[in-house]
Image (cartoon, rainbow, N blue to C red; front, side, top):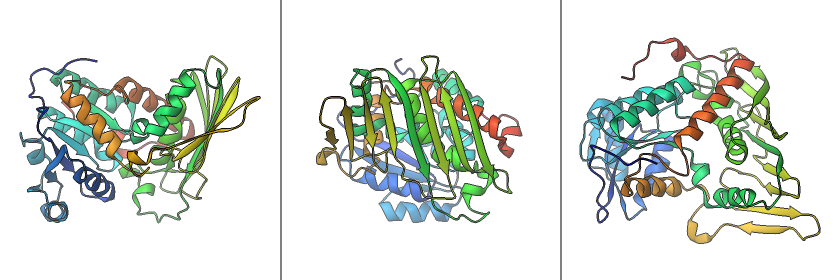
Length: 348
């Protein structure tokens, strides 16, 4: 972990000042959670449409509304910007903010591919700015507890990981989930969770294989993946935008198993099974708030900023890059490529 240089830290005795870039559903959900945090303040919102930014600002009591991303990025009263655009715009939006000296929390996946992500990471490190992918699963207290149990050997050596995430649909061709120009498809939107879950426990795989069903537009409607590690561990993962799955996960080790019921990426409980012992159920602390809360990742960002850190220990940048390398490999195997990947680089 490195210390920030050349930027003013948020003072420990005042609120962390947030900017919100984009005004869609996930931006609204994040803003609603920020409003409930006593040490956070939304000071500005930015969009490509001034009317959209103003409507969002009025909804959440935000003082400044910008109809241009550059104007938001130039606002020196902002400590950190939350980027909530569609995937294909993450590189441009986060790059504009980092180039202007802003700290950034960017929705997952951080970018369309690892090459774009490496550019953002390099820019953040060059400017001494904080950058984090908004992988809220990694900040969830129950997921952190599970990972700690596995790391402490509660189930022995990990042998298999299973996880799925599917939405019922159907989604029309114009929907962002089927739009190649917006980074559509099941893998980047949903599959990032099973892949990130497996790599949280096992690290980057040695090899990947995959099969998929593609739409007429060229994005994956559903993908099945097999990841393997040199230790002999395997992960079987599935994502879909054609059928609602149980969104369950299971981790099996040499001495036990942990099962997560529906919504594995923000669980309310999980069950530890060990030979010779009764199943042990772990449940969320009600004080942690709703399991769908974005508060945990927001708190992690603010903790890191106050500590003068340029990245999160819960969502380290090297881990984000490793997941994107896996996603790139999976897309190569299923034949999905996005229009934006052929464009000249724009982050400087």
